[in-house]
Image 1: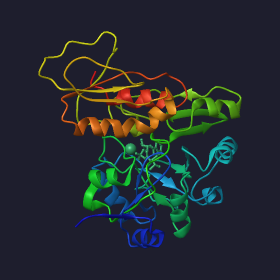
Image 2: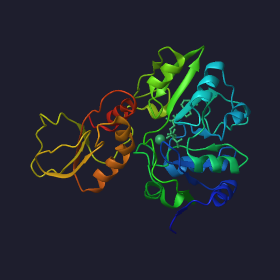
Image 3: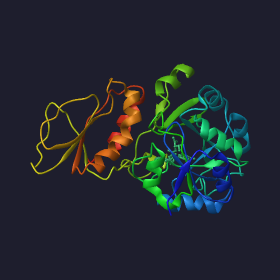
Length: 319
Ligand code: TXA
Ligand code: MG
């Protein structure tokens, strides 16, 4: 049966209450939402995504007044939640027992996020439970930026997709953890390090990627696999490839590229890193659909949202 999309909040709320899965639009990427207090529903999220059980889910709430029901927030976290939520940021906090262990993969902490999308907030207010939602894609692949991406990634596993249009930010939330006033960034994302440092008036620490024991399991070295080899190149001195290989070019700004190029898209027409973030996952999907054999792409300026774009490129890349 075809999965439906639409803007019916009551229908989405009812399905969640029944333990079903719903596509959730957020400002970052679409989520695969379930009632976080319903263990069966949460297990079906892991199954639908083919996600390993050690990779915990983020819990979504409608506003800051709900946080203390599910987690213990320290002063620095509270200050940042007040400053940046609703918004593209997730806070790792010690969890309360109300959140089932299956949501957090047995960790004593929970990721809490108040998403900045009006439909998401409406749905979160329409239900009387917290909503667990990872990105609505198969584990290890690119995240969805439209309702159709959710349907093409997960099909029947999703009962309904709340269609909030294309995601504004395009990369997932920044994940941060506060400890004794210091702020650690576990995943670069939609909230920039610059913005956090400006509010705190001090530097944050970036936790390094890992190939084996990641601090946040989504911080694995390799993730975001678009289904094609991805090579990060210098477009001014291109690598040799066999003539029969069809190439998809994803550049930062528009550029002409010689060779057997079957797809050529710029992440930004205007040279803005935020535009590049918004277009990144869609461009990787379109490149895959173009029939190309491999992708050539390049680093974007490593500032603001460009850092999150480069992080995703690095982890999508073949080298
Ligand atoms: O923007 C987003 O964050 C999207 C939207 C839907 O909210 N969600 C998202 O979820 O990206 P997901 O599951 O694809 O990525 C969440 C990441 C995973 O890498 C997970 O390991 C990490 O958050 N995470 C969740 N809970 C954690 C915890 N208690 N401690 C450390 N990392 C955690
Ligand atoms: Mg994900």
